[in-house]
Length: 445
Image 1 (tube, rainbow, N blue to C red):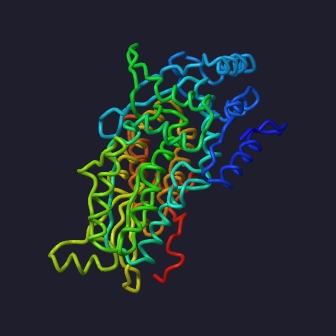
Image 2 (image 1 turned 90 degrees about the vertical axis):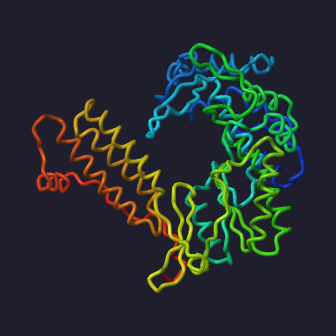
Image 3 (image 1 turned 180 degrees about the vertical axis):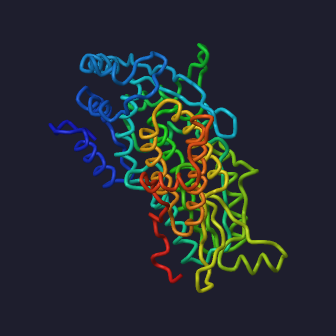
C-alpha cells in the first residue's frame, strides 16, 4: 500500500489503511513508516499523559514540549537515517499490597511518542483481523463486554466445564523471533519492522546497569498491548477458532482479555483434549502454562447436582477481578453468580488505606475528600455488575470505617463518633454502591 495522498489528519490516513486491511485479509501493508512524520508525531505527543515519571534521560513530557517542533524534527531525521535507537527503559519498583515489589518500566518521552505512532499504525492494520472473542486493549471494547460475553455463553449454551487457564509470565516471555514473524504476515515495511525490533531489544536500566532483553514486550511500553494481541491472535485465537473447535464433538467457546482467558466446554473429553492441545500449543511458541493456576473444573447448570453426587461443593473460577460461581435466581433457576475476587477486594482496600494515610498528611480533608469520591465511583463503575451488589456494599462499609479511623487519627483526641460522622457524611456524601452493568437483562430471574 502506497499512501501518498494529501490528507488532513493521521487518523484519516489510518482509516484508509484499515479499509485496505479489511478488504484483503491476506495482503501485506507496506510504506506506512512515513506516517511517523513531524505533524503526526505532534498528534501523538498531545496524547501523552502529563505529570508522569521520567525515563533515564530525566526529561518530562512538559520539558520535551518546550522545544517540541525542533525535537520532533531531529527525531524524524534520525529515523530517516536509521540512526534512531530507543533508550533503555528506566526500571523502578513500586510496593504491592502483599508487601512485595512490582517492577515498573518507564520509557523516555521521545520513545513514548514514537511508540504511540507505531501503536496507532498497528491498530489500524490489525483491528479488523482480531476475532470477536478478543476484548483486551482494543478500541470500543472493555472488560465488561468480555464479562457479558462469558455470561451469555454460560447461560445460553450447554456448558458443563471450564478451562481456567493462565500463561506463565506472558508479557515477560514473548518470543521476539516469533513476534517478528507474526508481524511480517501483515506488514511489508522494513523501516517499521526495524523500529519495532529495536523497541523489543532496547533493554532496561536498573541501578545504573544496563540489562539486555532477549524476550518479552517493552516494559511500560505503549506498544506492548497491541503487540501482545498480535502474538496471541496467532498463537491462541486463530488456532482455537480454526483447529480446536472443529475437533470438538460439543460446544467449545473462548473469551480472552489480553493474556487472561477462559474456555467454556460442553463435554469433559473435549475439555481434556483442549487442555493438552493448549499446553503443547503455547510451548511451541516459547510459552508455558502456569500449572498451579490452570485447571479444568465442572461448571454450569448441572454442576451442583454433579458435585453433590461426589460429596463435593461446586467449584468457582476467577476472571477479570471477579469470582464466578454457580448461583440461583429468585425463582430457583441456574444463574451465573459473580462477586469481587477476595484477593482483589483486599488489595483495593489496602491501596485505599495507604493512599488515605499519605493524603491526610499532605492536604486538608476537603481536598482529598474529592479524590476519595472519585476513587469510590471508579470502583463501583468497574465492580458494579449484576450479582455483585453484596461485595460492593461490603467494600463501601469497610471504606467508611477506614475513613472514620483516618479522620480520628488527625489528633490524639477522637473528633468523630458514629453519630457525628453520620452527620458529616450527610453533608458531604460519598457515592453509594450501585449496579452499572446489568448482565441479567435478558434472563428471567
